[in-house]
Amino acid sequence: MLALVRAAARPRLTASFARAAASVHTLPALAYAYDALEPHISAEIMTLHHTKHHQAYVAGLNAAEAAYAQAATPRERIRLQAALKFNGGGHINHTLFWKNLAPAGAGGGELADGPLKEAIVRDFGSVEELKARVNAATAGVQGSGWGWVGYSAATGKLEVVTTANQDPLLSHVPIIGIDIWEHAFYLQYKNVKPDYLKAIWNVINFKEAEERFVEATKQASA
Image (tube, rainbow, N blue to C red; front, top):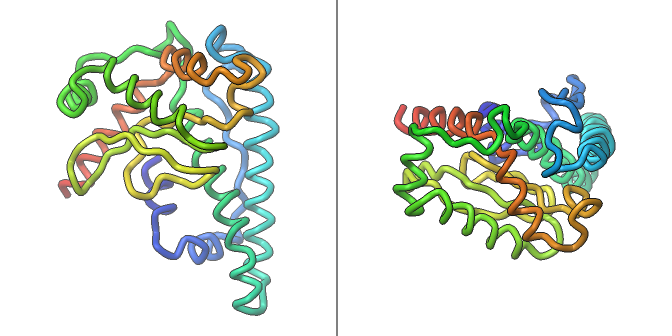
């Protein structure tokens, strides 16, 4: 998973996409049923979010990469960069997001003692304080975007970061990501973002987050 993120972090993002144009991106399967995250995230939201919104990013990325590979001039390639960034970011972010979730009672919301919990307490004081800071920052995103708990290789700490639209998190290694686009919550929570943000912690896959964190710290010290 981190390999996907590191690939996205390469300075010449569009060039890396162009080199991969021969490969076709596909919609990743979920490890759980669409209704498995209820009552915190409804089956209707999950179905639409996965099969419609994420699928649209996959289709858009494939189309943009194909067009980039065929582009004859620098002007044409520059024109395609926005589509590559938007759809590529949407694909990367959502691929991370689905793994970031797990049903309550099957690991969702359960943070066991271990390296991630120790780092959260060290960097935020408590797990509850982490949640409060993430929720405040994510609720404050203007328009659409993402809230993240990211690992900074520069500081060696976990930090709360936000990104706009479908911009991938490039400044940090993403450990936990929360989608704050309206399609992620509006059918169930309407315009009350804080209720969605409070509920989603019940289905955050902390085991997956810890695996990302451990790998990130290993890479930083290598």
